[in-house]
Image 1 (cartoon, rainbow, N blue to C red):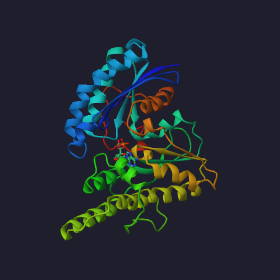
Image 2: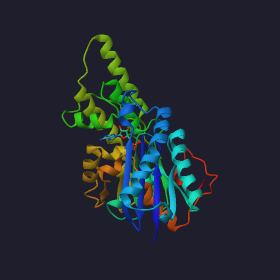
Image 3: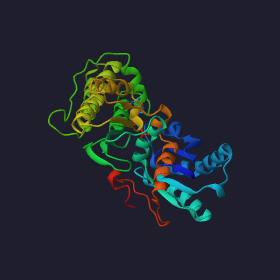
Length: 337
Ligand code: KG4
C-alpha cells in the first residue's frame, strides 16, 4: 500500500501525478507545445526554463486535486532519462528536494519503460510481449519476458520516427509537431509518390529514417526549383505508408519469431491512426492481441511515470540523492544509475 508522487519533465510537457494503491488520483500536465511551435521544434533552453516556471504550479494543482498532503507521500518518482538534459534536471531537482525534505525514497524512472507501462491503464501485461516504442526521440522494438525485463531487439540506426514526421511536416509547410497533421492528411489521400523503404530486406529488426527524410526534402526542394508543386496530402499518404509500414513489418516479424503473447504500443507515435488500426489487423490471424495506450497516454505525462514507479517501489529500486540525469539512458540499463 503506497502513495507515490511522480514528476515528468523530459521534453516539452511538465507533469505531476499521484497514485495511491494503484488508483490514479490526479494527472496534471502543462504542455509547452504552443511556445515551441513558433520555432518548428522543441527549443531545449526554453523548455528547461518553462519547466522551472511550471513545476511548482503543477505540483500545487496535483496536491489540491488529489487532496493528498506531501507528508502522506511514501516516495517521489521522477523521469531520469532519456530526454533533454536541462529539462530532465528541473524534474530531478524538484523530486530530490521533496525526497530530502520529507525523508522519503527517490525512485528513478526510465521514460520509455514508463511509456510501455502506460498500457497497464488498459490491460495487464502478458509475457513474453513485444513493445513497439515509437516516439519523437526514440524508436525501438523491445522484448519483455517478465516485468522489468527489457531486451532491445531492434532500434533506429539514425533518426527516430517521430523526429522524421516532424522534419517532413516542416518541409511540407505543416505545423509542429508533424505527426498529427501528416496523419490527418494521409487519411484523405492515396500514396502516389514512390519513396525509399530502407532496411526492409534482410533479417534485421532495426529501423532507419534519415534516408526517407532526406529523399523527401530533396524531392520538395527540386520541385520548388523547377516551379512545380507537391501534392501534400499525396505525399503524406506515401510517407506514412513507408514510415509506419516499416514499423508494422518488423513488429509482425518479431512478434512471430519471439512467439509473443501480446504486443503493446508505446510513445508519441503510438497515437498514429494507421499504426493503431493496421498492426492489430496484421496480427489477427496469429491471435496476438495489440494493446494500444489511451490517447492521453501517448503524449508525455506523469501518470505513466507513477504507474512504473509503483512497481519499482515494490522492488525497492531507489536512488541516492546524488542521482544525476541521463539523457541517453538505455532501457536495458534502467537499474544502472
Ligand atoms: O513520445 P513523444 O512525446 O516524444 C518524445 O518524448 O520523444 O512523441 C512526440 C512525437 C512527435 O514527433 C510527434 O510528431 C509524434 O510523436 N506524433 C505522431 C502522431 N502524434 C504525435 N506521429 C505520427 N502520427 C501521429 N498521429
